[in-house]
Amino acid sequence: MNELLDRIWLDNSVRMYLTVVGIILFVILVKRFVAHYLAGLLFQFIRTVWKDIDKKSFTNLVTKPLGFFLVIFVSIITLNKLHFPNLLDIDIYRITLKELVRGLASLVLVISFIRLLLRIIDFLAIVLHLKADRTHDVSDNQLIVFFKDFFKVIILIIGLLMVLKFSFGLNIGNLLTGLSLVGAAIALALRESLENLIASFIIFFDKPFSTGDVVKVNSFTGTVEKIGLRSTRIRTDQKTFITVPNKQMVDTILDNLSLRTHRRGEMRLELGPSVSAALLDQFINRIRQIVARKEIQNSTVLLNDITPTAFVILVDYFTGPITQAEFNSVKEQVNFAIIKLMEELKLETAGANMDIRITGPQAQAG
Image (cartoon, rainbow, N blue to C red; front, side, top):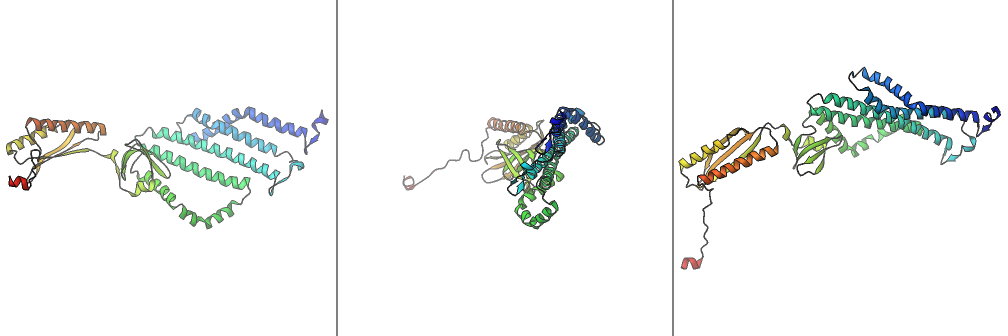
């Protein structure tokens, strides 16, 4: 038996192969328990910062990527104890197979580690969302989404640098120094993207609008659904979905309709000059009664102008910050009430009874 275990195959003994396989299988079998235990230790560390967080949610989110990372980590360390067979150490396009295998192993290890960090960021975002939901400030939630995406991008960049360092053996210091030489050119090429990124920070800290607000920018009106690193997504009143660069959201005149304190309705009536002063005064007073509704907080009805062809009456009123549908209903009721009043008082708008006659030579001769 010992003779069989000590037999050398591809520069390693059978005993060593069995030992490596046994360790890897053992780690695969106990990874869930070990990962759960380590997740509990990590949870205790996080709990020192946030007291009222759910342990079950954290462990469910982190255990799987943590277990995968442990299997990869232990497997690489264990396999490293084996001697790479000289028979397989061949050149593949300027690199040896041994270097290629080590590079791939480092790549998988870095990817699993970055995946674990991304899951932790997702959990922290969930915790912050729960805390933000206890307040009435919607901007807290959108700030969490923004920084979650931002830190994920940073971690992915760090992961890329780790891959270049450990998998491809590049000198990161020299690489960053070389990139600084072309930094100006890259900055010019990405100037618009950088401007949008800076504008996104302005939006989050200046808070001209938040997710869920109804805004009017350029010629579009709609509800803000998401504020990203580069652009803002808006669902328009036509139910289309538009993407507006953050720079435009900051530089152009933006009307946040959700922050309005009132909604304004107006009407301009032009009555014929034959209307008597008493009837005109009665008509204006009756309109004031119409707009004296509970939905209308402030109103103005006055004889605004007198022209050779009409008496101009201006009706101006304000409601509270009600929905568009409610405002349309109030406006329609006011308009119908004024029309019925004009019918009751037998009033017509200026020019309603004006006859236009075209005369020619035959008519003049007759």
